[in-house]
Image (cartoon, rainbow, N blue to C red; front, side, top):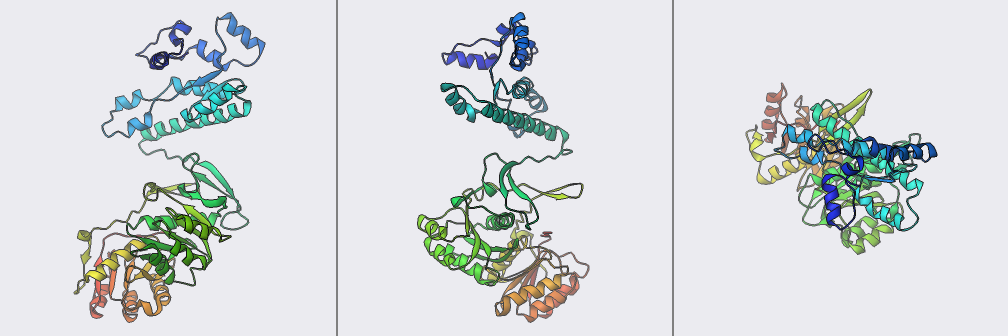
Length: 472
């Protein structure tokens, strides 16, 4: 039994079908908006498996309906169309389909509900055998309620114009514990059936809560660079980033930035990992390796590292976040993602000396890295690789000291990026004494002139971006 265009399609396929209007003896009305909303339909769906309900159906000349298959109007597709009108939007709010799914889902003990075309094959297999068992009907009912709930959420969000923000995640895995052993944790994916961070963990190794955080930030760093780039992540903060001509050199130089912190880290690279790189990582204890792919030989080498998890994210650039959500007491904070793009025309040279081409390339590289470091963030770089990183300190000058200390002798000739303005000239003075030649920062301090004077005094160069990269 089917209505309207569905009935016509089934008939064209050579299958017998009863028109809903013929069964209910009630025509489709209000321009086809009312078709299945009729007691003859919903009584047949909701009838329980008892003689009283069967007799009541029989007395009215109605039948039990054992299965409901419904696809909802494509509301989400319609509202994503740039030229969609409010009239078209309203017309694509499904009423009858949602009601059918909810009714059949409620009566899953007797009735099977199918809301997803991907389940058609499953249903056919069961019908070819002994029928759909209760556990399958229950699972399909849950899927139907999730479908209608999500459908209503999209409508509410769209019509509320931002007054409503809701979250929906699908349970992916229970984790051993959270950030600490006494905390419970689980991973939920935005899409049903998606793997951890939209990727696939090879060999089914279980990842920890902290692994997921580190791998997520590694992925964000990898996405920020189009050229071959590797990152070493430790405690959710990068301790080395390098852009090179090949994967091996990128990974090697990212590790070299801070070889001590690289022990027990997460390593990510935005290209397929080859055998040479796998052999490099073989001798280093790392928690996880993240990449868009692994050569066969490389995969075999890395699989032998007992405690190392290998995450393959094939669609590295295609699944970027649009919104970030953070839980706070009594609610949520929601913001757009800091994409951090920078055009050369937006950069203002404020020092007497302009950056050389090499300095400018390193400044852009360091500025891109800066947004992934906890504030107050300071990144030193040379030759498109970080030489020192400092962040997460209450004082910016403390972060400068940490970055310079980490860099050691490699600070000489490096450039320095700061995620926010320098409130005093002390950070610049430390940088100059360490041999740093160029600085990139947003500007905007009431003491900008003092900072610029210090840069000029030490014959350094400095550019302002007018854009900040706080990461709390």
